[in-house]
Image 1 (cartoon, rainbow, N blue to C red):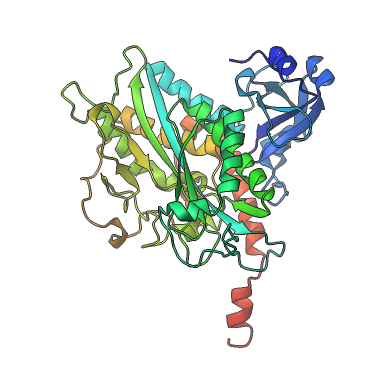
Image 2: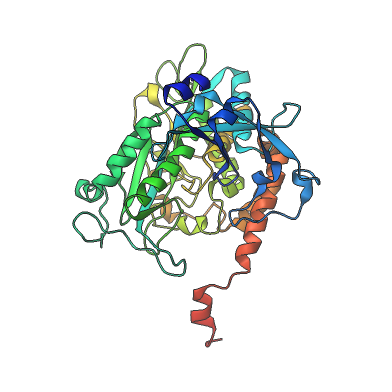
Length: 444
């Protein structure tokens, strides 16, 4: 863990970006001069920041944060301080935790929601381990939101016109950008691992090394900022929309997860003889049972459900299988000590704190309720019926009626999250799309 004062002196920092992740995973906060930051005066933000929609609006229900629009206190987490590589002057960033004036956590803070889920595991003597994989698109700068997105031009002077999955040359098209991304990530100690070209045109994937869930959520949160900033410096956009382009696959945030015994370090998904354990199967069954009700977290926007389409490299059900990429939960081929579950359902547009909290919550409920999974699927999961909600409205209905999830994620959080998402849905529903004008204006 860093000592903040020592870090600021060592790097000759002049100002600090004091940030918190909101419900959408957007960085909110203040830019503070070093002298003010070192004075010890706590940063304050309105609690309503946590329920600001992605459009900048707020739900009408003032009871979610208090009718007087009160402040919350933002406390820096020393383990998260890092330099901002793209800043002109020496600038640090620190992720903050949100508490009330009496020191109790703000229950609707995404970072607190993840911490509270991890406390359930801590009480059992278990430690979850996760490894996220993030897909994203590089697109040409597009200042008009009414126009479709296009792949950017690479070093050859041409944009991709076909799919180049796993192509090294296609990644090399953007070498200068990725050199900056890796340098920025190294400076911030984000510990990214493999870079590959995914299926879509100019679609990339970066994998993270496995580790502690809260630390990985912090890294993903900072990584998204990093990639967007680096892309802008190369005159292109990086987008984490789940489905940014018609006819191309969507972008996911796959989460590999396992469970270890804190005392022995043993993988609790594997028995002494190397076979899967009851904990493994029950964890898997929890994912199957509770994922439909968690879809507002795994797929938080209208656009998210466009990704979850049959035969488009995204799951449509909660089936599971060994080394089967067509199902929601894949068990990668591995040595017994590395046995893990890959949740392939979340989109990359999700909040990393909430998606990790949600998938761990489902697994925990499965274990404590001793649930039993279905038989593994060895065939093509895309040919099976849909088991996931087809739209955000259906997902919100399932989430609102699932009491066990409210119990582990926290009722105040679930209530606030549902109202926020309903507010966003209502805003979208008022928009008349170009499809409607094209096909309905003169034909119906």
